[in-house]
Image (cartoon, rainbow, N blue to C red; front, top):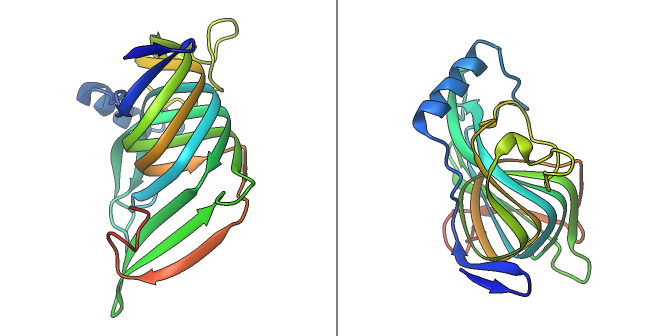
Length: 218
């Protein structure tokens, strides 16, 4: 870790906000009993996202839990997914790619790939939340705070991030926040993305036969 122009640069940044098993179990009980509000039930398919760069202002990151369907094909059984939630008041993304693989009967693996922000105009988002399980990137933070309580990341005078996503976050759990963050060479896996606004410049969506390197985003 080194100081760079008032910020902190981390080479090969990795997710550090993985919530504890006990906290995840407690949140899961609350969700099952209807005591906590979840944004939505996620699908049974994790997806990949890669970007050339992401510059976000008003950044916060904390642990949370996504509830999602266990079986992709059918059924109502649900499971819990511990996630690290990365939140941004505003974000500018260049060279974005998103891919998800589906096993289609009789056809095999089919990859849906979406690309945007590859031209002169980047992808732009406000109140962006990424529910991530894996993240690799080079990262530089401006005025970062490490170890704040998750519920304080949006408090006036203390918090730097947008409103906390929902009550499924670990309220008093470990979080970090920064005025600005720049991620380059991003590769991540996620269960969900939500945003107040999401402008996809130069959008391209295609279906590809197969999966893996050369077909998915990475």
